[in-house]
Length: 311
Image (cartoon, rainbow, N blue to C red):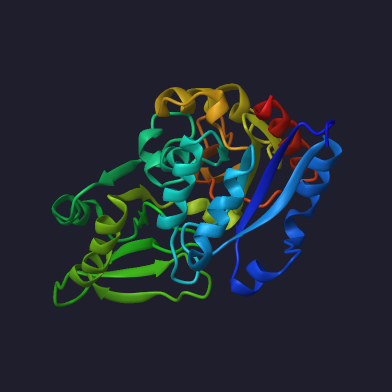
């Protein structure tokens, strides 16, 4: 149609049955389809699974752009093949949000280390080798002062561990660990056993990140939804997000404004109160790969950003 601004695909992970459906649907993305149609952008569903990656590639190459909603880890599957395909189509002129290279800057736990000196930073260390993890991490563990160890890529609390040294009568080196994954229960294991399990994170993801545990965790987490550089939901307490933290993050990560994902969120924990008794905030993680457009304003803002990018 001549009055259409462009053609974009909305891509999510599905199974073979969804791929074979003539009209696949994702109810959570319906508001985005509607907002894009209101902006005269043709949007069509694209279902991804590894068994039919060639068909998805062909579909996306016929688009002007693609918006991607796929978790880093889902039912034992990762994004390795998908990211390679997205890089390929992007090199042929298809605009991809979020581009895998941007995910590797923003949507991994390493961003907590690289931006630790910003206002949202905390006591943070990075271990890029098994040797450095085993040499340095045990010395940072003290009874009653838990640390949090995070794998670089993951979602749903997978590979995020609260670790606390346990005092024992026999002087054995033991730790109490709790994974952030829903339904996990605490366990007491030897420190060596725990670190052995973490070695695979480094081999797969290149590093693990360690932060101080935030005692105010029980007071809840603040999730700030962002479209490009504009806060679109739940950000009223975090004025600095738009005016200070995002611009400084882009400088640190060497990103342009047009690189920013069209929908992403930053999760903040309450840090220690400052000398004036005011709250501080500690960045817990940035989610980029599969952020649902939950705030009411998000789909409209996404559609407006799509029009800007296509133009």
